[in-house]
Image 1: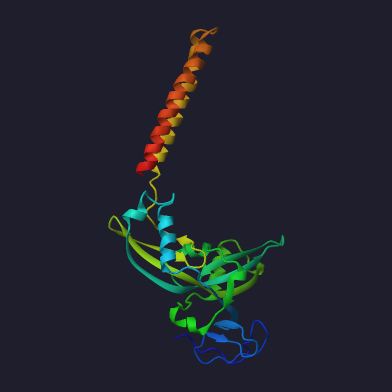
Image 2 (image 1 turned 180 degrees about the horizontal axis):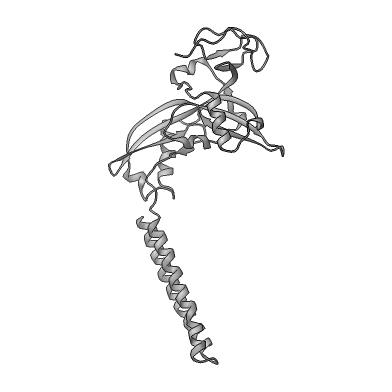
Length: 269
């Protein structure tokens, strides 16, 4: 249990009204202006949530579409077995960065432990945020990462603390899907406001076959490029012309064969 929150010197971030939380209370509403705030140690920050627009069926469709995409192994959407799903509001630290040039951007850091750190790449427009409501508590995961720790992570990403113009706690609506593929278990998150899918580890396409095709193409066309040179060395007058003709003809054949090979690899991998 966190240590008791001091009963004095805590003021609302919005109106400046003095706050008097109960012992151990972290989420509360300002009695003067109605702002939802979160108490982190002796700091008070705004507390928002992102409203979901997807139900579980639509979230599963987003997951299936991602599995059928170019990042994952072929037919993952058909070969993977869904083993479980759940919904929760996951906390993230929200930072508005204002650079010396005047440019502003939004940065996120997880506010609780998660195996999917890619969640920091959620696109989070400020206009979509709503005041956190107490009836969401039963579905919300409490924050366990202090604000100062998140600021330290920002510094490691070369974001000076002096450029952080605004900070808040935001609960994101997430569907957590567990699935298995070839005996291994994986986790993917579907952000329920936009349908974005996030996963750190997943069955990715094998890169080796594509690299083999690329290396093979480079070797073949390098050899073909030497044909005109060899022809010119054999007969300076007509050898180069004959070599170019041979190079063009063989190059066309090689291109067709390599294209067919690449298509076959894409269909199998």
